[in-house]
Image (cartoon, rainbow, N blue to C red; front, top):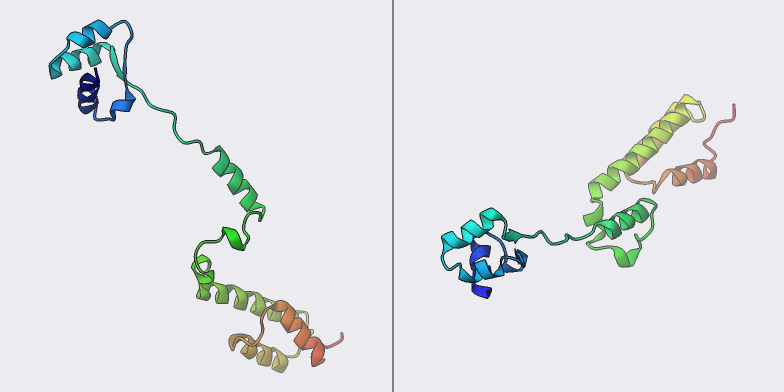
Length: 148
């Protein structure tokens, strides 16, 4: 029977584990010796290919749901270097955009003068500020904010 299963698997281009014999047709299957005999039994449905249960994505979906909330993203869950996850350039672009947007906001609200704006803009370009908060600290420290 094992050889018949192997033969049927070759015909159906699959693994022998996925081949199922019909219980009622075991006698007929025993008598089948040629490839054409096996093909005939496949055609009438006495030998069938079964699809095993596939891998469930339920747990993967749950993990993704948690990650979207910011969970499971600690140091131990990370693979790859810091810049493999987000490259240096993209990080720089995002940081500079936020800072420049903040400066524009300040000039529109006329909280800083044009020369101050130019000076700060150049500092942003040179990578002087770490983030938006750092600009705020700098402005208060050097008293560059104008009162209306």
